[in-house]
Length: 407
Image (cartoon, rainbow, N blue to C red):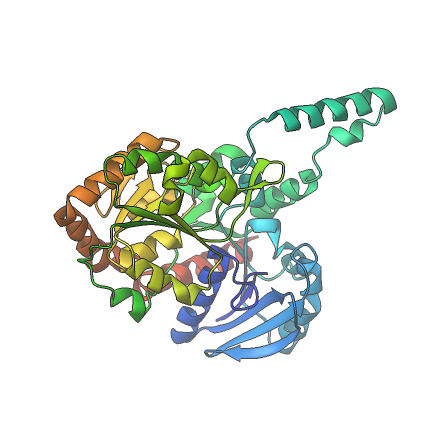
């Protein structure tokens, strides 16, 4: 079987998030299973073709918006030389739709991560006086000019394209029940058309070598600092923890996003929620490379993932592999990773008091933390091994081929 992955994200050039992690791990996994895999991806600095750990990689120098059309010539050349059996792309930006539309005879699989539409909704900034003023100015402009097009969201065409992309796919694949249900509810994609194939995870030896029984008194968040990740809820929990456990330290590992307030980034927004007397207890690393994550997790007792919503969560699996105590919200795909409380503590979203209570519980009860860490590493991760996921992935491709042949 020949499989083409179309994804702007692919390490190292565009290792922006979970999509990049998924594509590289699944491409290597399938190659190991004898599948002929080629990856078509983007880069901010270069174009060309390379071999990466046995995987054929084709990069085009492009920004994300222009990538879907910029990659077309690379794909056509390879497809003409040796046709592909399946095309796979992410939901985000409908990045593979242009390639699929150019070769409608090839079965098309869309993998759900988190569509751009969902990201925009989840990152919707709360109303501020400045934002209200801007909206009033826009309404006044429309009244004066009659230009009602100014009220139309600039991203509306992209939102429609993402939804259309799912409707046109031969197979829609969800990594969790949470994202499957969300797509069914919000975009009315029939649940019967969505298959469940979790993302495979191959933990590094550096993660597995971290001792489970640590005593660093440190709490770490890993991920981009943005509203939908719930970092503002963790920030509000910090003083609640420190007033009971004054020797605990907090670390935010990840790129710093916007807060929604003019000229205020998320780091500043977080510090505004923490009394100045506790500022020295909080550390920000900024963005780090994936290979640095084990070092930060080794210097951590507890990982907190307070997302308002997540479709999956590789950072949770990394924390499980490291044997850390885990606190995460229970309204999304992360809850499925910790098996709804079996491998970590589960809290409601938007609830700083619940976050603080769970952190304090794990600080005061190291035996519980160690027990959860051992179960997560040696039992919980087994559901996401390459050997467990690869057969499900291949059956997904076979369903797509069968559906295409039935049309």
